[in-house]
Length: 132
Picture 1: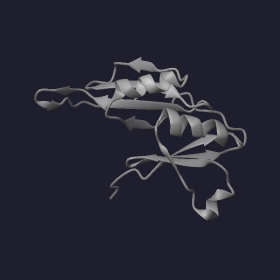
Picture 2 (picture 1 turned 120 degrees about the vertical axis):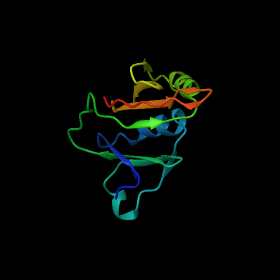
Picture 3 (picture 1 turned 90 degrees about the vertical axis):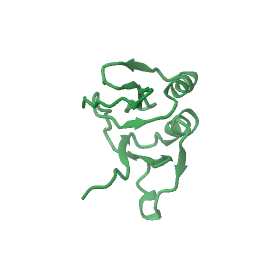
């Protein structure tokens, strides 16, 4: 019955919104979207690009996860990696996911993010998926 992922919620320390906005808007090219009025008082900020939404909520005692992350599919992974590096983010490439080019980076508060693009051949997309 599940048809799609509506959004991914990440956490951040209270008051870190001004650190997050330049990363998600300027470096990743996402648009900040308004939170519903009933949720504004909780802090945090929401971002969207295409059909992908990332919600950054605030959490006292926040500690970023070393492993958990959203995996975001992109269309020009080289350009995105260059854009992130130009904004000071460290990009770590990984070639251990069959059929994909991918890298990881971290947002300014330490949330891990994965970006991936399927490899293609003359016959169409190369398939293969391994969860990590």
